[in-house]
Amino acid sequence: MSINIKELLNKKHITGDELGKVLLLDDIYRINEKIAFVTDREIDILSHRLKNRRESQNFECYRTFLHWIHNNHHIANSNRYFVLSEYGKLLTFLSNTYYAEQLIIAKNMNNKLNNIIQNLSVFELYNKTYETGDIINIAIKKLKQGSYNVVAFNYAVTLFSEILCLPNLKDAFCVPTNKIEKCFEHLSIIRDNIKLILTGTKEERKQKKKLLNILFPTFSLADFKPLDKYILLARNNVSSSLEQHIPNNIIKILKTNLSDGL
Image 1 (cartoon, one colour):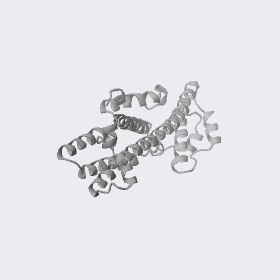
Image 2 (cartoon, helix red, strand yellow; image 1 turned 60 degrees about the horizontal axis):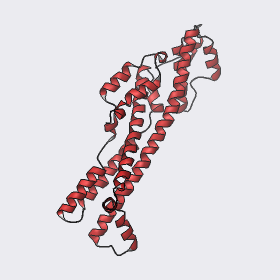
Image 3 (tube, helix red, strand yellow; image 1 turned 90 degrees about the horizontal axis):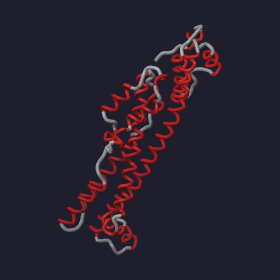
Image 4 (cartoon, one colour; image 1 turned 45 degrees about the vertical axis):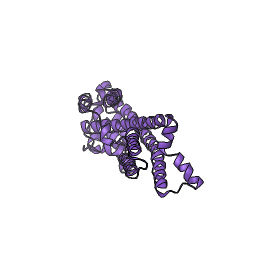
């Protein structure tokens, strides 16, 4: 979207949408380009040229939106780190299991440290207590919830970016997800590598493989995409002006997958 500050400054009256988008562009420029798009003095001058009280209220909607997007960007970023933390827990279970199976193959179980690693294998832990399964299930549930939250926020930002004709909005505020995707891939790779070196009888290997599939299912970031019907519903609830809706409603719509248990 092209906005000429000089042209706006030459206008006798401006709308709340015009000034609101100037405010958003300034924030985007400060984040993406590390420079200001408009000065505080220019904002002050333009704010006194709003047509009427209604336009002033509309401009305040943009201020509210800016506060909302910063706050929810912080929350989404926290969820991203939360996902990476849960990934770390799952990785520990799988790594210990992989090394334990390798040690059995090498028949190197005399070392005290090796015995400890063997006892930390998910197969050993699961056989001793079903709480291990609960711990892993809780970690995966938290990982999924965090991923849903990140993806829903990014979709919301993308929708606002399109509707408000501010393409750089998503560049400034969408939370990076490439590391999350790589973590998902890494978990699947380690799980599948364990399957290639499973020890024991044919039946024992079969049960181990079954347990791995149950405890460590395969998923990708695409699994957390909001359903098309909710994306459409969210899009229909976003107007070209921020005056008509509350941004949090869009997030709630896009996160309906969670309440559906998907």
